[in-house]
Image 1 (cartoon, one colour):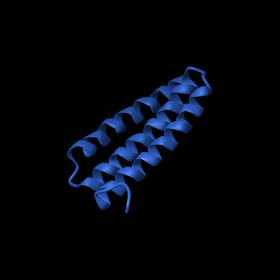
Image 2: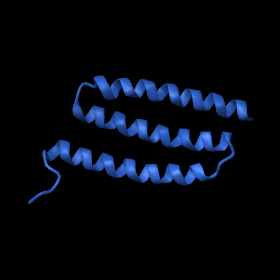
Image 3: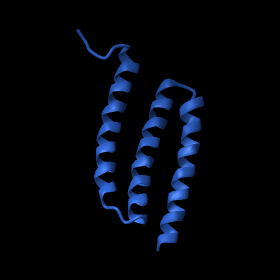
Image 4: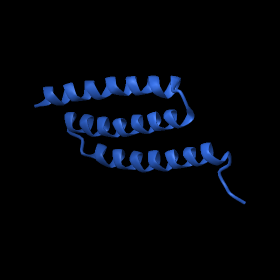
Length: 89
């Protein structure tokens, strides 16, 4: 059972590398933002898989907090990219 989770973890880590290529060399700003969001989502899943492998259920709480922070960060960056400012006056 642990072997299958290790394989899943390696696959997720390799897809994070593929998405990082899009985040660095993306054709546009919004493609880079989406790639960064996908990397964050895959990191959350990877945290949960690693927590299961090493039998630490606290990793689920860490993954949930990371999900909230990543979501808020994506919204802030998208708002800045769209308007050019964070606060409207």
